[in-house]
Image (spheres, rainbow, N blue to C red):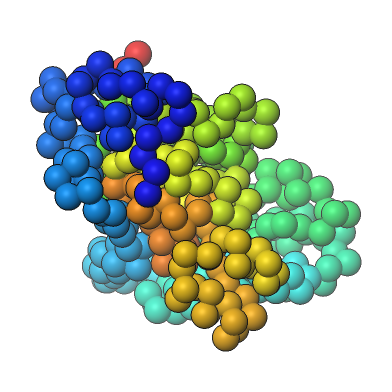
Length: 379
Ligand code: GUN
C-alpha cells in the first residue's frame, strides 16, 4: 500500500512522524478531544496509523455492515408498530412505479417486501411508460386523499415526458416519505423536524450507530444531487461537521477528499474514489451501486480482488460502489457494496412511513427516526 504521496510526503512532517506515514498535504490536525496531533497518534483519531506504524502491515478497514444496522432499526420499528396497532393504527405506503425500468422494479419490489416483513400496509400502482404529467398528478391527488395511505413514494426516474418536479411537488408534504418535497427540504435547511430523504438519513444512522464521531469532523460529500448530496451535507452540518460538497467542477478533487475524516461518495461513477485519495483511518460511506458488465473494466477494477473477479466470470456482472475496493485497505471504516447503504435506504423509508402515520395522527416523534431529526444548530 502506498501511504506516502507526492513531493511533500518525502519530508518528515511537522509532527515528527515517519515520512512513510505522512500524507504531507494537510497540516497535522489537532484532536479536539485529546489535544494530540493526528499524525502523532491520538488513540481516537489514528488507531489505524498506530497499527500501521507498529506492524508495517495492511490493516483492513472496519466494515460498517448495513444489514446489521437495518435489523436494529427494524426491531425498533416492530415495537413501535405493535404500539400503534394497539391503538388501531396500521401505517401504509403507496408506491408508484412507472414503466418497466428493471432497476426501479427491483427497488420498488424490495420496498414492498420490507413493508410486508414489518406488517406495514402497501399498495403498488404501475402506470405505463407512456403516462402523462396530468395522469400522474391525478394519481397523486387520489393517493393524497386516501386516509389509509400514510406515505407516497414515486419511484424515480420518471419518463422524459413527465414533469418530475411538478409530480413531486404535488405529493402532500405530510405523506412525502422520500423527503423530496420543497416543504420538507426547507424544513431540513432550517433545522426543523420533517421527513428527511432516505439515503442520507440512512448514512447518518450508519455513522451514529457505529460510533463514528461527527461533531467537528471534516466531512466531504462527493456529489451534489437533490436526492443524496445536498440533504446529506445539511444533515452533516446540523450534526456539527465541517462540510465540503464536491462536484464535477471541483478543483483537485483527490486533494479535497484527502482532507476528510468522513467521505460520502455519491457521484454515481464506478470505483471513482481511489485508495490514494483517502486519508488513512478515514470513514468512507459508499452510496454508489454500479453494475459492471464489461470484462476489461472488471479486470481493471478488481485486478487485486480475485474473489470479485471470479464472481464476475461466474455471473457475467458484478456490483461495485463509487469507491474503489482498494480503499478498504486505507480507510479506518467503510460500508460494503452491496450490504452497506442500500439496506438503510429502505429501512429509513419504513421509518419515515411509520413517522408519517404518527405525525398525521397528531402523535409525537420517537425512535428511530428521531436519530436523524435535526436540532436547531448553533452558529
Ligand atoms: N430512485 C433512486 N433512488 C430513489 C429514492 O430514494 N426514492 C425514489 N422515489 N426514487 C429513487
